[in-house]
Amino acid sequence: MTAPALLRGVDLAAFAVALVGRLRAAGVAVSASGPTGFVAAMRTLAPVTRIQLYWAARLTLVNRAEDVTTFDAV
Image 1 (cartoon, rainbow, N blue to C red):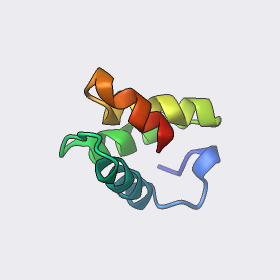
Image 2 (tube, rainbow, N blue to C red; image 1 turned 180 degrees about the vertical axis):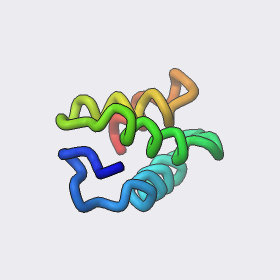
Image 3 (cartoon, rainbow, N blue to C red; image 1 turned 90 degrees about the vertical axis):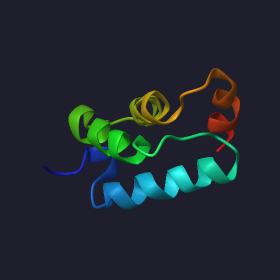
C-alpha cells in the first residue's frame, strides 16, 4: 500500500517510532503496540489533512486523558 498523500515519500514506521520517542521523552505513556497501531491507522485512513493525522495519532498513541495536553504540545 502506498503512503497517504499527506505523508507521501515518508517511511511510516520511522515516522511513528520518531513520534513515539518524542512522546515518551515528554512523559506520555505509549503502549508497546502504539507505533504499530499508528502505522496501521495511517495506512487504513490515508490522512490527507493534518487534522486527520492528528486524530489517527491521538487515538492510537494516547491511552490516558492526562496525557492529552502533553501529546498536543509534542
